[in-house]
Image (cartoon, rainbow, N blue to C red; front, side, top):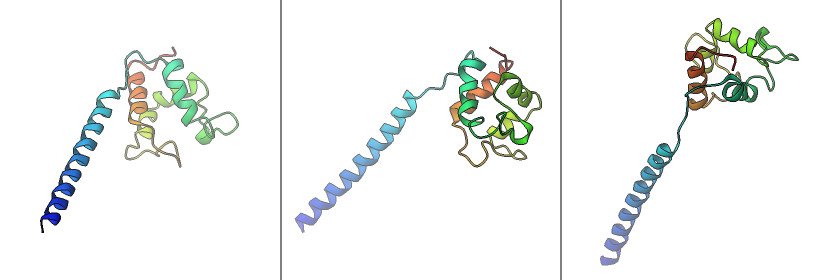
Length: 124
């Protein structure tokens, strides 16, 4: 009986320690992860996101899906001006989720694009 009690105590302590470490590790990772959205630049911050997620197989000159070409500032700015860019990348109701058939952009990348738009969507 004493052996079973020791095993039960050990298992309880192990499970508690595991969940405690997991929680601490997740909190630590979240604390160390930052998403800087200050002073967004089209060429430095936004174009790389667009290139990696929008123009690799769609929205380029060879395949202008939806008549949209995002290989330059003017194409992306047009999507900002017509109000669709934020809706599609945020997967908002009433918008076609983009990238179509792919994973949603990371929260950080969406925040960067939103910040760039809020900062005037400059060609910088």
